[in-house]
Length: 330
Image (cartoon, rainbow, N blue to C red; front, side, top):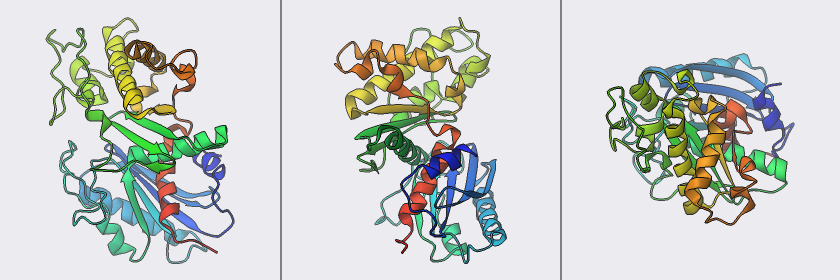
């Protein structure tokens, strides 16, 4: 049984109703698409590289149509489709640009319409769209509820990979407002040892802000300053301390601004298992003892955690969005 199946089966959604849901995790590096039943049985799943908008969207639409055609008993299509996408996104339904990417560092994707190809191929199918990190936060909040027996009052999911993003769920609902959380573009204090290959202070790579968190600590930022990923850095290399310090500052800022009951770290950079304990230590440093809670002291390993859903948080969140978009079933 996959992590997707185990997690979805644990959720309090109706089972045995015959409904099928489609979910798409639309990332800056890869897209993952799946069809699953309400009780979590995965009917079909695929993964492919993110390219230009036209070819990437066409591959997703074509795959979904073919997957539906090969599944007996589905009928005309899924009961709902959820898309969890990298951003920033226009999520205001009243906007003429609803469903489009806004100004994004991903080359060629600004103003791409994520919903139009699916509306054209599957008219009438309920669609839901949110950021990949908001969707992942929904999945992790559901996992929290399963383990703790209650919905978390607030939870933040952070991905550190091709970019850095943060999704926020408050009382079971993703946070939206003027836009949606764009936590990866906060500015940390610069670390004295954050140097490029020439020994000069690393300028950062964000095309909008230069040395914001994404510009300093994302996977491409590490590649730009080191010439390789964090996985190739020796344990004594200063890059570990620099990365942990930036992410520790980030956690302290999140804690002070949003007061989450849990901070979840996912993404490719966080696959380095020695990194998370270093981040916890720097979080405590930057909080300076100000938050008088067990989670910020001895219980910090249960507060700043890896994803309960593993690599499936975004896709599970997309399926969660699909179930929310679908009309109630008898």
